[in-house]
Image (cartoon, rainbow, N blue to C red; front, side, top):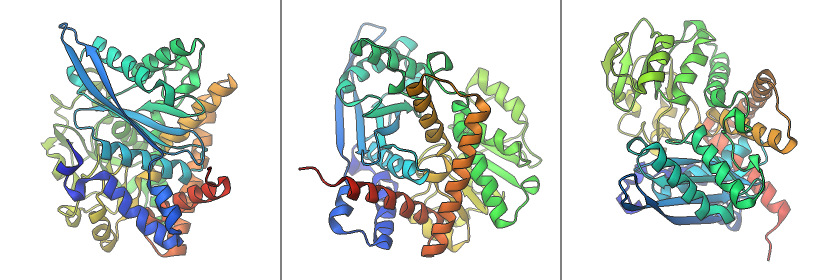
Length: 421
């Protein structure tokens, strides 16, 4: 899919740029710095020839975008999906830049993607694609350059192949080159739960800010993957009742609350919600418009747009996914008084614990899970307070406040480093 084929409202890079421009204007960012911060530092497109299981040779396309290195090495996941396109990867890399700055971890933003359908590939084909992709981008990654991680369509096993390929080329063991690895390969305790736990923490803070009792609150979760399911279970730990959850095929709804333990056991075997009878089947579109207190879009980009924003009934939206709200939806949600915890804050628990994993790998020492969770909670709570404080100071939405906070920190680092050459 080329950028020309993407509807303007649905183009993630344009959505990111629209928010960036508002934040830059509020900060009075000088024109030159505006261009520096909006323009990715490096974009890499690679061909990935792979021999498939049937002996046929197929060429896949891979991307790696390093948006900013001003505050540290690039950091960001690798996405395997059939609809990956360069504007999506650019946007995701920029969001990583602002996200790392919002939670004040010393990374810049990066993102990668391979155009493929991982659910239609064998394990062997996935491994060969991964190893060839690593070989193609080898010269641009490393623990002090660019540190990939899992994203949609990738997992700890993919990171294991990534690590092994990199180490074989380097001739030494370099665990800090990727995060989101299995524990056996230097992964961090608490990493799998990190994004969902972060969603819970900022939602809890939002409810407290609004004077709402979590034990009297309901939620709808779009997405039953790692982020969505764990968010639901983490919210349950503070008393929030989840009424609906979805996968790519549709949603499951029960007005009295869903049995999350049953759903988790089913998903571990089936990887989808088909066959569950603990609720009624509704569409993903219907889930977004349910009369709940909390909506957690934790699937993909642009699920809330100008077409359906007026129908949103939730009082709090916590963005577990990257870019789930189109820019055109922001003003509608603001006018309705919806308290949005934006993606570059809400789902930053993942990159925060990825930073902890990187630190542990560099030290050669592992922290206990409780220590990881305590450190992450401190960062997420402090970052939430900083965003809300910025919102009050500039009289803007939480989303623009988060952009202001992130952009200001990156601009400050860029000025202090100066422009080389």
